[in-house]
Length: 264
Image 1: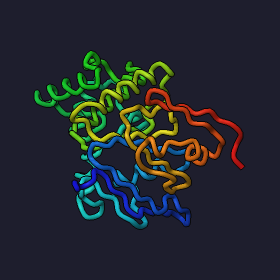
Image 2: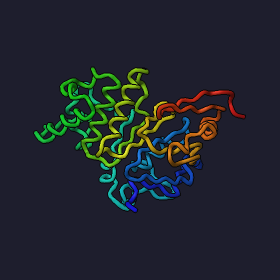
Image 3: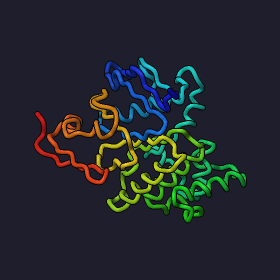
Image 4: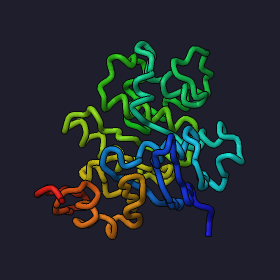
């Protein structure tokens, strides 16, 4: 069997006597696209920090493409994981054109100050076309809409040719129409032949597009369920996840849930 794209084994993170993650086992194979689902405080952000080498495990092992954090160069491993998150979005320079924002992903730089090579420009234009934003090349960051910014950041992440692309609550701040347009874009991106492995982090089941094949559900720092989406996404699992009685509905590959009384 081919090496997994991501592998987490017996992961435990504890700080100042508080257990943040405990006994997390998770494996992502090539060709799978995953959703990490959980309520606020379930451990989603901490798991991402461990995956990108910014939060050291108390015990357990984290591997990316067969290389293990702590044994390989973390800076090189991070380049293999593209990350789109609110923390990155907030650091962008207001006057930086979208073309430079995308190109800067090759150098992992915020507020790029160097001179772009012709090769970098050509590649950045290709990626803007891939994320359906070629028309934004000369527009500064400050005038872009939230949806446009998210697409540009995806282009930026793809500039380093990552094998994994993590989308950390990418729809936060988008209005309903912009959110749906963005989700349709994610569907098209994930369906491309050479798409990186996608990992979507969310607490909204409505954001799980059909292209996502697997789901990891976290609750209180532990794995509640993990596996093929159609097996994991049940009313019972979601009721336990969010501590409410709910009914999960599925139509045309999309999910919605109806919430009832709070669980005792």
